[in-house]
Length: 398
Image 1 (tube, rainbow, N blue to C red):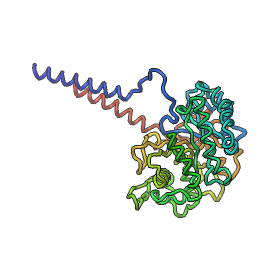
Image 2: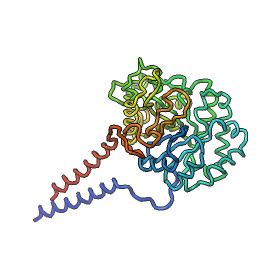
Image 3: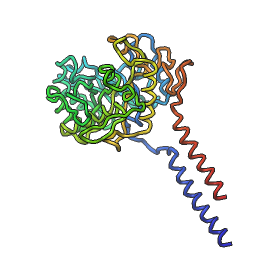
Image 4: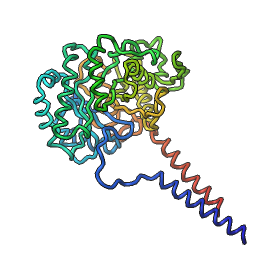
């Protein structure tokens, strides 16, 4: 009798423990308003529109919601997009393009007018959570934009303060790899001296207001610049020996992580030890010119599938293992009107008609014959493991 009661008590206690464990796996509804988060999770998408054949913004919202992509970045503040995103629940980052940087630097009233026209009327129905000021300005071709950039950023921030939005809308400017003097090994990365003149006051201000450092990180571009010496498997997240940073002894099995840690190293060398690095753009072209090695559907699919899986795992990098990586993928669509090499028109996860360009687990607006990859299989396996464990437990205690 005593043994039976003891076993029954232990079983009830273990059942309660299991119940509370399972509760931890369930999402809890929030009560009351929450502060707007500029980036939910680790995965976002760049919605470029330099094309004359892509779906309308309302169809794009439908596609994004069906794909469960919550973070979206655009390159302007087009009102048709802002209208379409109303009530969608999607996080939207809008942009002040490079051609307006000088004007915004010279006139604080210009930033207030812009916010009055493109932000204030749309909140809170459209979840505008971020504003980029320029894109790849420092280290870019138009050197006349470098000096006014920081003042433009400050004027936009002052405008946000006037509307009491400085704690709800994140302000940043994305940088290309051209701001770095070197990036190999990652620990040796530093900013170029001529760039640092303008980068330092910008970083000082971003540190003051708590903005991350955003970099456009493209293993594809690094690979096509030197395909003879870069292992494509290292660029595609496929099995490879990787590299060991001789200064830190950290091992890197993919170039994406190495590029992020190179940015961290440059920030640390400049004295910004606690600034977060996020990726404003990354992707792989599914087609390109003959000189663009590695531009293929198979490589694009491999890169974006492996990248998506890596971001959903919420992992950090070898240098910052406790800080999950956040990245916006480039891009949502193939954009047929983009200038430059052929690859520029073939970064999209989706074709212009809404069909998937290749399958990494998304469903397009229209059916596609692209071969399937089960992007969510690791989630299914995890759920199946939990359920199986419950059944085994019940079998043991009954």
